[in-house]
Image 1: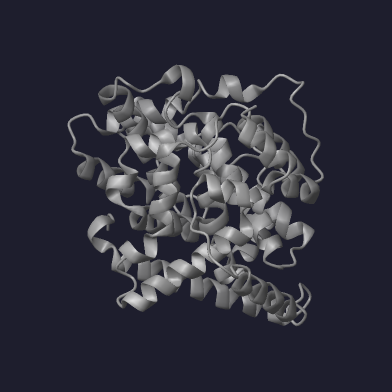
Image 2: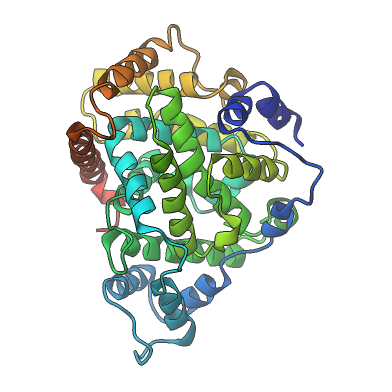
Length: 392
């Protein structure tokens, strides 16, 4: 294992993850992620080829968007792989537990702005420490498009797939997943066709199954651990619900469900094995981290310079609080004084609020309701501010 990543597991945030999850880390077993780096969503790619046959990207995007709004039938006049992809996605697996998914959605909503901090400043930022994972972002122009677009698109996707009943066939979350699956395949096909310098031996296939699983774990394990660090009390059913929610999302995105974790212990053990196929931050990682740290400066969501600079400072405080110092330094995150002040205040506030918002209380449903409104409003503000770079 890469020396820096080894220290991450021995002394950094990885050790905290291990202690919190009760995981048993072991490299003396066959690492399935070596093979998964060579695997990808073949059905999605074949469907994408049919979608883009004779269509521009904009036309193909609108076509898929329309298809995702209505149930596809066996006798519909669609190309073979495209029809097969939709029919497969429409067949709800027997293992899906709607009650667990609802609990996961409830937590996502009631966690309010804590969720957005955990996802942005812990999950997304720490993901930049894995150099091979970042290569697909670089090759699809993430730096040229700017961090605001990735934040906007990721937030828009997350909000829509984590609402109650969003994953019902042709629901809004389901529609977003169909479009995201298409974009994954389009990006993979584009990289393989246009970038002959893609190092398949080192990086595996673009957007391979191993990297998709790691990203999925970012939305479940890292999200939950971030909430834990911010002082949120999470019930066992809520925790299991988040993993079940993202297991179903992963299935819809083309990941075989037997490769997706059911709980934090499995997720941590999987992530540990995946990191053994990675190397720690390189120059591209630092550029991506720097772009994210300065996202509020570049974004149109804040108008005044003092607002932009304060929000940047606030996010840097949370990054430094949530991610271990060595990883932050590797990503060249700004060093600031008293960075723990705001996060600790939020942590104490969360603990106080939760004393009156227990699972058995009617205030719990109010917290879900208010969190949903707050997250939706923030997502809409980002979409409005960056509408010039987002598909409508």
